Length: 84
Image (cartoon, rainbow, N blue to C red; front, side, top):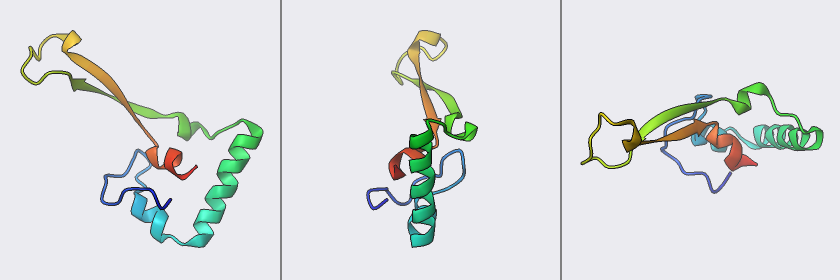
């Protein structure tokens, strides 16, 4: 968790890096147990698979009305992957 960047917007779960870092050792231990259990049993909660797909303009000087000028990015529970 020490590698997490501060002052970033929270993910879909509305949990920021500050929440995880400053919550204390007890939360870190429980998250560690949750993630290890997820790996051990090869099963993750359904919410960990949800994401938000956002169209991102490739070239700001291009024609914004054409679909091929966009690429999609997926936002997911980013704090989940950084704490593992």
